[in-house]
Image 1 (cartoon, rainbow, N blue to C red):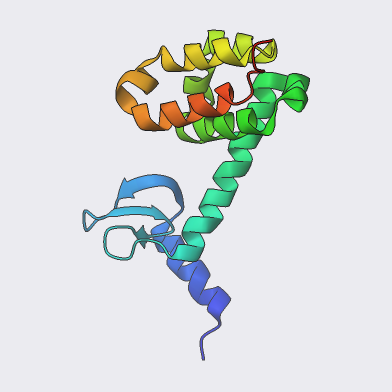
Image 2: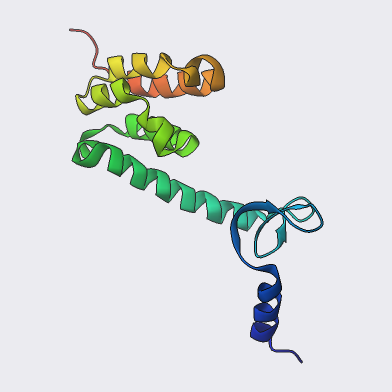
Length: 144
């Protein structure tokens, strides 16, 4: 019986490790150590494992973006910003400079307005943007 570690080392020696998608010699989109994404894809467990990792990265990026200010944000705001950070990444999220400025000031109404004044809201994901806007607006205190 072959030792599984020996088999893994031998196969990996031929396949290599690539952390971004590439096309293998059979012209199939692959990733990792020869994972054929076109024919095999990934399992549900692998998808959720990657999703959890990506959520952790989005959370770390939010903390990096807002610093200590994030501790004062209401849950609906955190939910909206996590959704945006997950989808857009830190570079594109960082492009919402005025929204970020208003969020740090706790001005959710203006932050929501700035969110909607974007290509993200107009063209890319209008329904998703509206849901995130509504989360921000849910934190605006009623007028006295």
